[in-house]
Image 1 (cartoon, helix red, strand yellow):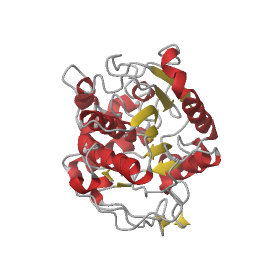
Image 2 (image 1 turned 30 degrees about the horizontal axis):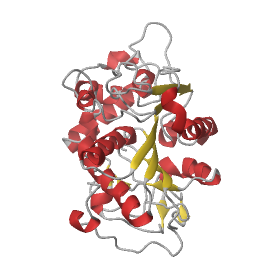
Image 3 (image 1 turned 45 degrees about the vertical axis):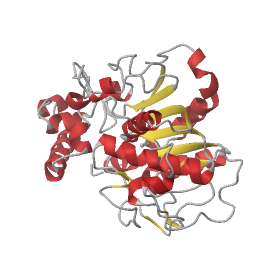
Length: 345
């Protein structure tokens, strides 16, 4: 479970890249790109359309499969760097290892996937600004997994407030806790173990997450709760207007369910995020003006899938069925705002 200042020059932001882009990796005609944003507690490398990490998983355990698919479809794809803690991305061992990556970007362009949502958004915005100023990307489709959807929204708000030149064309979220995660709700004492209805995996996940939140004291683990995100004074309400003009596709997983009366803040879920949260069922149209939704019987990640002895293709960012949904979201983005709202929601 462990797991924004465009419009200003990079020099003004204090950004220094330690390695120049590989020759031929950023032709002047690359005006549009897909950027994959990973989620909470993730460590993911920066990759370009031409180069991933040479050893292990080319883009880490969240992004590798979906990046490969999108590259194969002819998209210009970048993965945004993330570290489970402060600092630059380093080579990883253990679950989902990677190494020998093409470029290591500075900490201020690297999401701290355990820190606060808004700080993560500031770092992500600097990264998107880097794509604009250094790689000629001025139109972006964001594909975000888990809390990457919240980080993306925070980044969009900063880009808008600083008059950034790039356009965010669409946002697709995969298992994003729009309304929070029941694990964080348990850590915040707003949901009890009884909501698991005796499911051992659910109970163990809740207890493990609480331990991690207590250990870290602050950051994403506490903020990914209904109490922080929802309500008239919540983080979502403060985001009203940010997604105006940006079509959003939400994909949720319901691999895990219980029969009979259940708490919809918990069941069904993907192991970390309830389907109701992933599909933003209670998020107001002022916050999320245009949405389309889809549900697949997937686990949150290949990590969760591995814990339940499920195949990698049953995880949201590794499932070909999800790839098809992302393909559709990208293909229909230019006309999406003219289509019916809340389809599948």
